[in-house]
Image 1 (cartoon, rainbow, N blue to C red):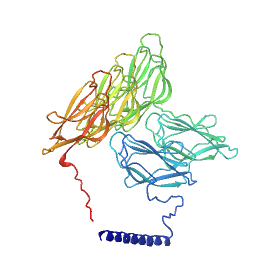
Image 2 (image 1 turned 120 degrees about the vertical axis):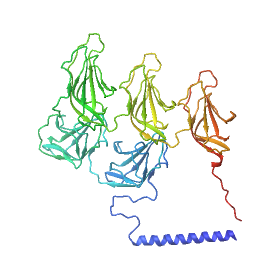
Image 3 (image 1 turned 45 degrees about the horizontal axis):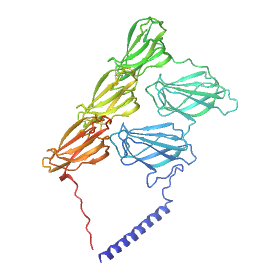
Image 4 (image 1 turned 45 degrees about the vertical axis):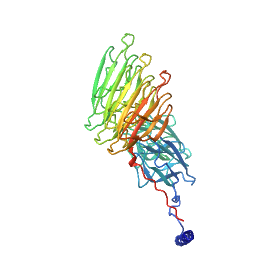
Length: 594
């Protein structure tokens, strides 16, 4: 009886649902069709995402999706129905078919957003994430082909130290001259330039600054016009987009840009056997960082020109035999830039001197110039430590951002917490850009640079590192963890106490376990009884231990138990949670009716 009744109800529900769907379909049909749009170039919304990430996405992810634009139109934009990222850390980059960067998205838009126009026949979406904290991710539900006008464009933003040529041809027969029209220009003012040149590379115009509503260049003779994008090492902006080439009457060339002031200069030539320093102060009292412009640098063999900040950190070195014109320094935190010229540093008296240098401008630079940084380059055979404090007094855990890491063979950088635990190690020969550290418990992060750890004096040094940001991280950063990596031939024990005073038994959660050959991790109770062992070459993620009687759980790491010294060590472990048996979810069995 129960079975017949249930079957009848299911048949009735299906018939009724089918009837309602039919009525709705007829109503929409009479109104002119389902999902129609007045804009014929727009593809209708999908009932499911065209492209989406995992939810949540993974740590340390670097994944690319491709959406093709087969509409016949020259560009397209995509719509994110939802976008949740770890703001300012994880990011989405959009590229065209030639892998030119079109847009960088590093902030969430939970209610959805449209992208910028991406020229070409496809859109590439790249998601990159760091090693800690994940969010929901993204879902793309629409691609809209567009009539975006463009014939040439830069990356958005354009690259540092760019020297990029674009050559365009005027298709008008025998034009007296040619010019280009930009729909948009955004450049770092008086630092980065677009140089308009003729077919023979003669410069006619130097364009800098912002022209949001468009700009028309000067005309150069003939049908060929060249555009050169020049940028320094910091402070990049959106770039440019060219929409057309026009005919025009050729105009007279402009002289290259120059600054009328002299802020600091050496003698020309500078004397031998002398070290001299100049201090330049940015007149903007609110400047977060500054950089100076050299109209000319000419220094001889064995001589050097160094840039320092107010705290005497060596920011940049122009080494022996440098000969440059029109170059900006690296950025320095704050308003004060010190310039030190040391001549004939070898002291052998065999070298002469050269013209020297002239500084004619100082400008504001990046918003995040560095919370801590080494000398550039850092000295050999030195160990130095920097302490960075998260300004959020309620931060449970923190991580720092490196804009750059370059360390030499035998050198290393260690990330250390307030208790002295090594959380992360960047080993010898590391060369990275735009990377976040692992997370550390609390607000305090120590960065330790150890150079030439072999102590043999055979290795020099490299550029070093720059930390420019600190952020809050995970809610459970670790109740106990080993050094990463842990040392060989060591036995160490950690005690974790369950805060539940009535706990009859407890278990702990490992976010990660990586132990090498001959090593092991033991889980013991308060009396030292071994309840569980993770043996050699264990590599696990997101795993709970066995239950241990009472509130106290001991974790013992024994490395290289063979004692033969043939094995190194591995990453170690991190325990980030503890649970009582009373906190286990209750499983309910389904009731069966007959």
